[in-house]
Length: 293
Image 1 (tube, one colour):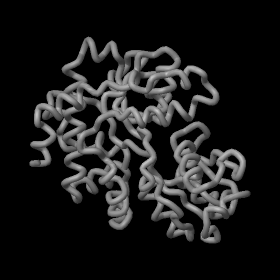
Image 2 (cartoon, helix red, strand yellow; image 1 turned 120 degrees about the vertical axis):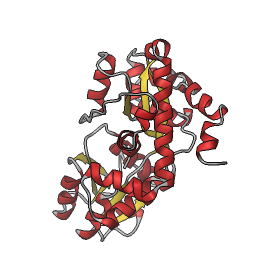
Image 3 (spheres, one colour; image 1 turned 45 degrees about the vertical axis):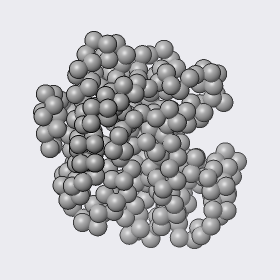
């Protein structure tokens, strides 16, 4: 559901309404998307705060102009025998790949549960959601991160959702709108129209439940009504009406890197975001009008 605002902007015509002939390209990782941005092959990407922080610390002029998902998402899925947080200790958890947002989210969630992710558990890369469900079924791992609608699939296979990480509201830009400072200077109207289109898409998701579920179902090729309902309930409240790229979300990513990267420890999180685009939408009354407030 995290990319659903982009799908909605495309499928429901919000890009076209804002004068954008946008082509949405799906890539397999934030690293590839970032490479395309820095090579000038695309002008705007939707990626995590990790891509922003890593690229800017390496000298790129990347900047986040809006957020879509300002917290870690997913659920911690566990075998049914695990009934308390302390029972995670000594167990093995699975994530997509090491160094990804799914691993960061799991680590932060474990800390909130009183479990040291470095000392108390082992975390290994397993692959996508189906691979994680299979690994849980075979007891190769005892817990994993997973988002809807795959949480329902895991529960069908006998696992349980131990904690909804999104409910913990740990600040982090799981999905944000990223561009370059050079693009902001040379093509500001284009960036402004993109942020406006995504803000409209967020409004659509939050106010048109059935329409939003239809968009997600088409793009994920999911037809199960309960899975779509649960996905909607999990994600729709998370999208912010006023999508400021928060400093707190950047700081979480910097703090995560700081022990291994002195540049991260010294960096000012405010320099990673440009609030002006959302600020213009808010001050103009556009967002208030959307929600009829």
